[in-house]
Image 1 (spheres, helix red, strand yellow):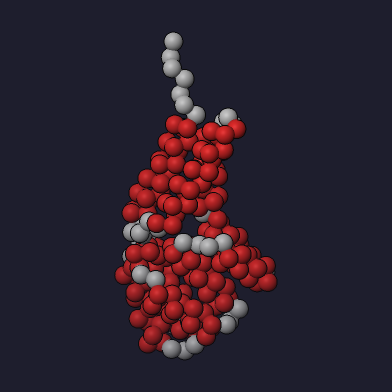
Image 2 (cartoon, one colour; image 1 turned 135 degrees about the vertical axis):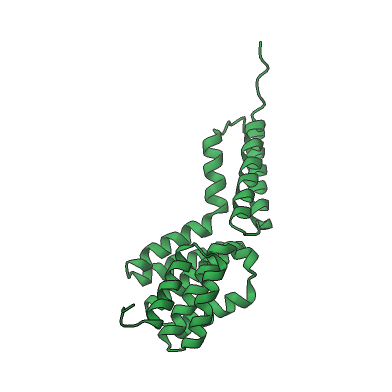
Length: 206
């Protein structure tokens, strides 16, 4: 007769597997895993363990994983929703959701991603000086190791586009080239290459 598995073992297994998986994913993206992320995952697991021990409630591993994801990724999820509204020109809703994301106590990685998406929405509204100020501040305040290669490329690309719209072509060229250097095969690098090509050849003739 097999010994029953203690209900806390699946809970702890899901938590540590989640942290390790996201850590490996961050490494592949050339990001630094946020300590806040790991602490939040551990804290939530401790709370759930306490509830299970005191009430004998059993939590399904899939629900445990879902709760971990929603809690630790809350700011990124809200940022995606805000970006969804911004792409459709619903900027009031976008601002509302972005503000919620900002108040959700994002970790350093998520805060940087949020700022980039807020700046993109400002560029869409032609609020170029505000977008430039936001991206320049982010560039100074957050290291590339927190943003990761993809979001570093996004930062430089959007800053370059904002500079170009402000007719600051020299600064735009620098930032677009940095976007290519940050992640050469990314969508932002390809967009940057097209933007540079259009500047060199505005008529479209080869």
